[in-house]
Image 1 (tube, rainbow, N blue to C red):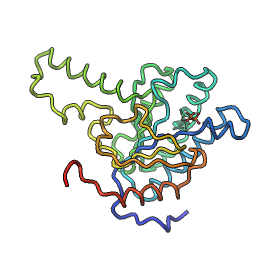
Image 2: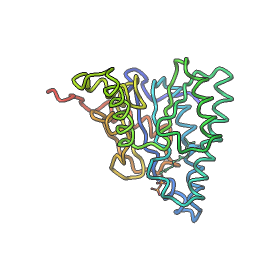
Image 3: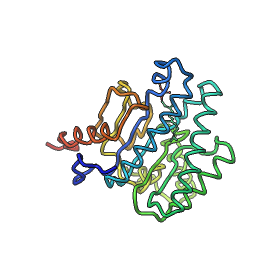
Length: 241
Ligand code: FPP
């Protein structure tokens, strides 16, 4: 499908998406929540394709938070299995030379060994790719990410490799899971909720937020284009005038 509508000049470099509303989508249809996640995973694939088509550089999606373990086991298992399926498919496509770099951000140590292995394999495959970078936030929490970075920095101070006066914003950014990547210019949350829910809390300091009423399984490439148009209409001052 050709993208005939969006002017692809002057795109944001990095878009973050909180893929919210899967449960409500399923409930509206009298279906178990896992069906909402299955449709949400399909939407995610369509949005990745669209981002590739328009030439976006970085996309970060919130797939599973550090708090999502509180959900029923059946629901957690179904999300993990959708992720595994996605990685298998993406690995096959990327092996065929699709120019996408897939990265996972979050604490991978709590995941099943097979999922960890698949994640390592797809990250290794894409590490030198220069096209779209897709970050999947999995067992991710912004506060947990900061604690992880602080522990790494404190370790270096303890070993005498760093002086506390060396700790500045750049150093902290470099120790986050997104180290080396630009901060998100635009964060989109569908489903009508208007909060950040521990997503990229450090990186979002100057992001523009677009909240949309559509539930994630119904979110379309045209909705993404619409969010980009709204973003373009904003005046970003970064604290200046
Ligand atoms: C939030 O909606 C969504 C999640 C916690 C899971 C998101 C997972 C996917 C889209 C599928 C797997 C992802 C990939 C990348 C293949 P919610 O369940 O909180 O919805 P609700 O607020 O309506 O209950």
